[in-house]
Image (cartoon, rainbow, N blue to C red; front, side):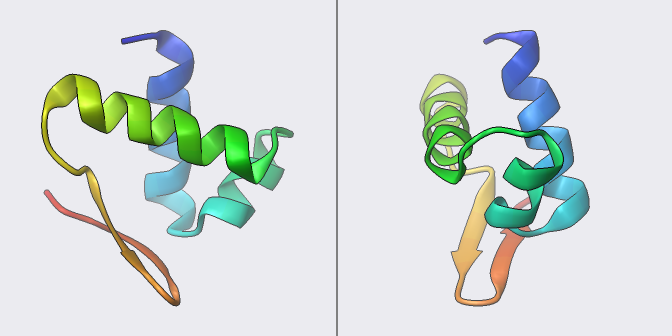
Length: 59
């Protein structure tokens, strides 16, 4: 787990939208998605539920 992944997680939690969160952090949407997917793989469970309207935290 990297500090950058935690930063991505927090921004995504705040924005509830991968595209918006990635724009706010000045990274690509694909980079954000891949980083979150890797973080979910590390912790062993999905952190967000993906929806058409964005994402929802699974906590």
